[in-house]
Image (tube, each protein chain N blue to C red):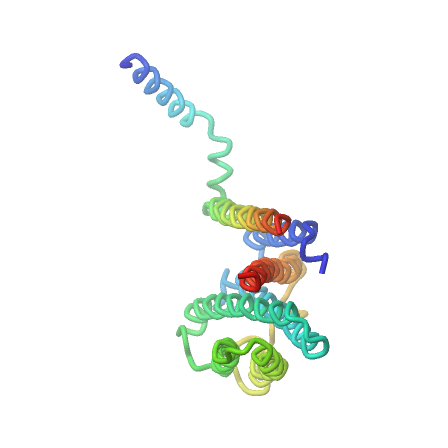
Length: 67
Length: 224
């Protein structure tokens, strides 16, 4: 068990170490006063709501077919 | 009514709004007066009213059809359109108030546009109250259809005509231009038009979902 936890921690350090060096996406999201972060968040929210609406639509269709 | 069960227009609406979200935040905008970057609200605040207007128009259409044919579904469509419209009304109101706070100085400055929009809001609240006050279904449908047909033009006059005839802080009134030909530059059109086209269809979509739910509820009540 301990071995796995250690392994997990090690992979985390690898991820963090990588995050320090590879900064392509990081840099892109930081340009222009970080507006791209806002755009991404708004897009995520809207896509989420849209998918939600589509699933409601699909569920409704199913119930309507049952009748 | 097959249209409301199809998916293609919902996808197009989502894509239109989605594109307006990205371009609306990233494309350059003219900085005018104390508006600053808030001019971008044009892509989000105004389409709410467009969405409201669209579902209210559909609602009037179905109220008229109800009076002509007397089909219960038409009445249900009219109510659910108004319900959705009120939702967009509130969103338009809140976004407008927030925008006003940072450009006009107050959330509510008693501006003609704000006041008459509030009156028109009560007009539509009264519609829902009226419906709940009448128990008999056919009577309710008929009376509320007539009310709805009269409420719509009054709402139009209150929101879109009267404020423009007096001095108002809101763009489009008393020599205070809307974001028209010379303000709305080419870049803004790329975000504004998709938003103005996309949001009304999102509103319609929500209204159709509510209508279909209401239809199911109605069927269930009729059986039991």
